[in-house]
Length: 138
Image (cartoon, rainbow, N blue to C red; front, side):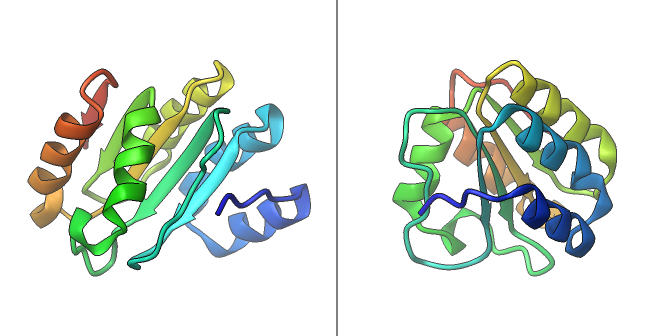
């Protein structure tokens, strides 16, 4: 399911989530891609359309790796992504600014927020399912 958010809802998300995500939320407002926020669960998630998206996979604070998410949905997102960021350390604005610049160019971005023990699992997952997308692991 694709979540389409109003400017007000994006403001609420900015208040509830880490402030470092603000560049991505602003890029969503400015450029209109689908925004997908995914927490640990085993049911399907989107987007399933052809347009650009930004997906934030929240694999923290209890990092469980790719197996904690619906595998077909993750593979679909990774296969459509034009860029992948796997964030394993302390969350900061820099990577989200980088993601926002891709969004501004009409690209689809997959952002994985995880912990260092799961970094290699996520690196392998993105290498296997998004081989053409540049991936950065921080």
